[in-house]
Image (tube, rainbow, N blue to C red; front, top):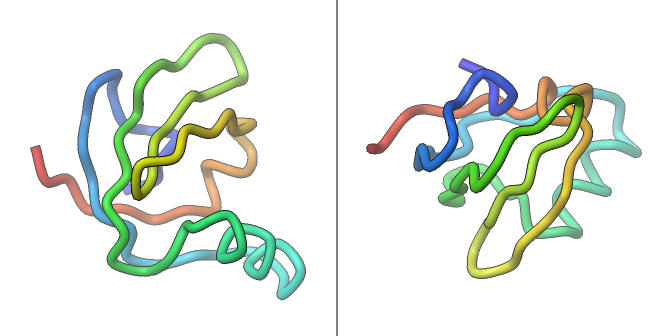
Length: 73
């Protein structure tokens, strides 16, 4: 499943990053690594607020569609 498909409060583990090399590197530099745990704090409109490894980020849904996750809780 994609990060953009998660529900508010859901915790998941990143399994794969899609997109071109520049986008993958941007996500990795922000801390979005394979096997990192991510929590969707809030989804509103076209934006998501997530935490990954203790840091909070706002992401566009188009970017969240590039992040494959597996539900943990």
